[in-house]
Length: 195
Image (cartoon, rainbow, N blue to C red; front, top):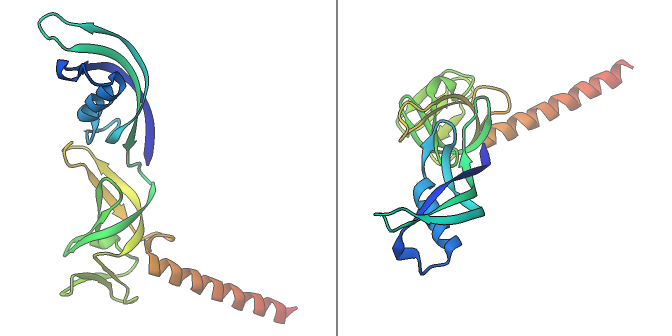
């Protein structure tokens, strides 16, 4: 999920930027510091969106740069457990599918790709034994986040599932919807016959 977060901190503006507009110089330094940063509390920082308040600057002897106490907003993507996310299949392997869910990729293990026995085919697709449904690179899908690990901050791991109702490849969801509508109309006709 994307969050807008209010933060504050001291921003160092180097002397080479004293000629620039103060707000622009601070925004540049904040984006340099935070853009792409990954932390467990923030998630993946996408960038600074607004400088809300700039305090009076101070110069520390021996440094030459100005430091400003600044209040700002940033946008971050923090994956939440049980969150449903749209995504695009980027790669298929013999153990599952890698799905891009925005700034991060998640992994759908082969056992979580669909409610069927799934095998990896030579054509780089995951195929269901009974349903004959296939999942391949480029497919658009909906998944649910079932695991988040920040063990390696540079590369957080996201576990996804597509086995639950309302999840899976877009075409599967449309197919299931048409099937439910057809069954609903059939049940409605049978109810009318009984009356």
